Image (cartoon, rainbow, N blue to C red):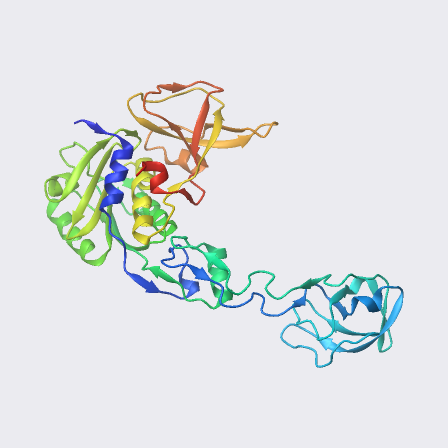
Length: 412
């Protein structure tokens, strides 16, 4: 079977997946989703000027010459503004975050003061505005904050909450997943019999899916019986927005996914990449379907190249591919000239600040430990059979958020 170029397959997949339904969600439930509409600040943040320090709110001209004693009129704390206004020769004791009293334009840090009965001795002067957080110092009302397609991380969710905004996003995708193979047994199995393998793929896929913003429905392990697999597939496609399987997509006699779905709305491709050459993609009961290879490293690499970008596209995210950065290989490594090879590497910087990469372990597609030790994937392009020590290399930063759009990677 002819191998298809990676970019061609990615483009076909991203052109095929649908956008999900628009909904409004609480900021606390928005993590990993993408904005449908722009967000503009409806008010100043913070809404009032407040103290950046524990100390005394004063008029700066009252402490131009120090030391000086000021009458203390009262106290202000976060959530409890002062009743009195500061005038010349007076101060109000203030805590961090408390609203600035009327009349005050600066805060003297408590460390440079001494209490004197009902007064305070100021030992160091301040300029107007010093130690004060102004109203709108974070965001001014009317400021454009986030653009459509922005994927929401923890800080974005916090900003949305501070603004009181209920963002319009696309619904969280529900992904129904399963692992196929008669050799697989539950991960809690204490003692393996000859030929058995503990299922790591459903654990791996769940983590990858949740990292991409999806809700997961775990259909567990499905053996190589076509009837059993068909029943599970029908239930999965009914329950999920997308169906994801591992195993059963290659050329073997017991590849159940291929045996059942070939010619039924699902294409089976050989992609010019390593690991992860075999891939199934299409629709099952109108839902996008991905059949990934069975080896766990192939699952990871295939997910990163196909499933994650597809999910982010369905969410309406502007950026769908991981960041790539230049580096230098520290050790010689072999690849496969006819394929795009993704090497598991660990990175570090030399004394000159140059990013360097070396293999994190064995590169066979079943060596999951090397993936755990890696912090990036070194990309060996088609046409390159090997890297020598010192050769430049591009690293796909598999631990960083997406940073490239489909147009940047695929053109168009």
